[in-house]
Length: 418
Ligand SMILES: *Cc1c(COP(=O)(O)O)cnc(C)c1O
Image (cartoon, rainbow, N blue to C red; front, side, top):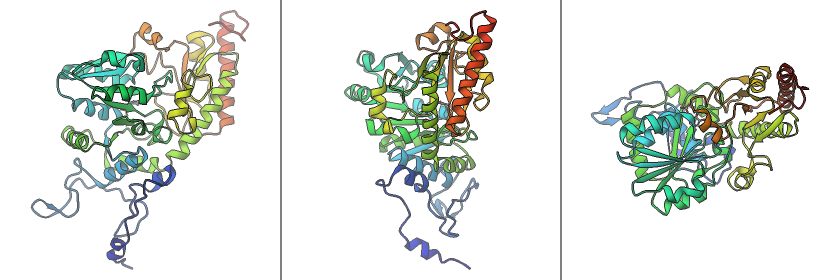
């Protein structure tokens, strides 16, 4: 049976309106049914080029796949809807999204960044942007001293909330009002919370960036990045650079990430629930010195979480200091059975890592410790497994790690030593 194309063309486009809730948008935004076959899931459009009927007259809206293609377009529309943005642009990685935003600044521009920014972002700021004449000032307390750091050539403020791996929060509206008073744009890296928990544009930020590699794709099988924003002028500049720089994701990866984002709300809810259960168990454990988790009432910025996060959720990431120093921390990472020892985060599977020796090893020890990254700090990314299993896994590994390392040091094995 052939389906009359007109049937579909006459039907109003199935675009969910912004009044729909997050889950509805996640499933339906940017997901048109195929007008020729009626397929409810978009096909993967691998073609690199698109036919033109006469010179400069493409059949549809596509010409060449680097510039734009159906899968990337649909994925960008989906995430734009979830971030309450007019536009989103996808890149080959989170780092490529960051690099493109920095490349959009004129030589001689100045940027202010939080100190405990993602390691790769720090590396780009200090070792690449500098070569292009863009300088970056880092500050550990941006809400407090932002006004002092703003110069005539300051173009951008870069914040991450929560920070990695100590999960400190930044008051986004406070930074935005100080920045906007001086005509400076604010970028928020929202990777750790995902658009389900936090929408920085609603708090006044100008650009939100994501490592799609983490929660948005969520299945640890795609490396991708994205920037979302509302300004038409910004869209022109960044889309030009997306095409000119060419750091674009493949159509296949866009299709996978789009499939991933359709369950973002379910995954992030479960990850946050699991992280909360684990954080509470850690807080109650005699083997733990401190827990960093914005979902706990003991978190120093808990009141920011209540204002900025959906239902005050803490998200899926936490870190804690184990008793027994580096040795106990290292043993803990090897002893967990469900939490896998690996870098990265935000996937369906739970991961554990030792920031001082892995993700943050490149930062000199004194600088690391200034921002709370001690040798005994362990970072956990809780996946979507069952809470009870994760709590038991952590408790058992804690007991064993502290016992083994305390035994080796000749102490009683319960209280250990810091
Ligand atoms: C992973 C990550 C990045 C970099 O993203 P890639 O996709 O790995 O290039 C940027 N910011 C944060 C917070 C991240 O976790």
